[in-house]
Image (tube, rainbow, N blue to C red; front, side):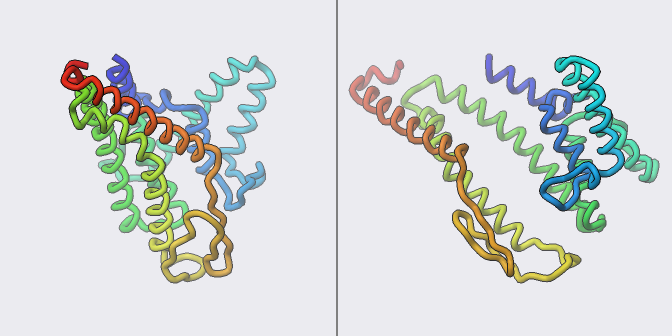
Amino acid sequence: MGYSAVAVWMGLAIYGENGINKHTTAYMKGLVVSLGQDTEDDVSDANLSPIVRMLKESLAESAAQEGDTEAKGDERTALIKNLRDNFEIDQGKLPAGEREDWTGSVMQVFKWHYAKSLARWFNEPARNDPLVATMSTAASVLFWVVLALMAVGLFAALRATSIFYWLLVIGPIAVPVGFIAEYAAWLWWYGHSLNRMGAFTLKPFMPTVFGDGKVAQFTTHSYPDIGFGLMVGAALLLALAALIRRKQLHEAGAAAAGM
């Protein structure tokens, strides 16, 4: 029942009309702010684009005049409206045959926002369009992979002697290792995918995954935080639980098939 509810929610959010409304306010706020974000880490109002600055002022006035609950509702509405307005402005610049109507699905917003982010710094459609297509395909494939894994999980839970049963716990145990591998892969991709139109040229490089490092004249710092520690702790507890369960099944002998 829980898997079914999650699958339906995912489908409605990713492909359904106004699916972006099912996402978190923080995610939508990040999308909006990134449309006008400056290169500084701490972005002041002076560095924001007029659209984003007006949005922040409008939200501040709304929060001051109304209660917190109403302000949160207004914030989500304003964020979605901002995304839709920007989307429709961009669509208006395209040839009539290439324009899309706003559906508000997470997939549509993701594709448009990713393309807009790439073009913000390097307006090279010949280079950017394949990247957008690749990321969109990857997102769609990941959606179906998650659904498939959920189905496998349901099947695996039926028989304790099945190898899929143990995959239910082996997968989460391996998450910290998978996270490090993915993190390292993204660092490698970043260091080997610099645009030739950048302010200066660097040879391909691999930033330090954990610890202090150096890239050209820049120093890098990369250390795990509390979230990674919790992830490792959860993996260790799951490993302990798996060993206990394995011992129980071993002691149960032939009766394990019915457990």
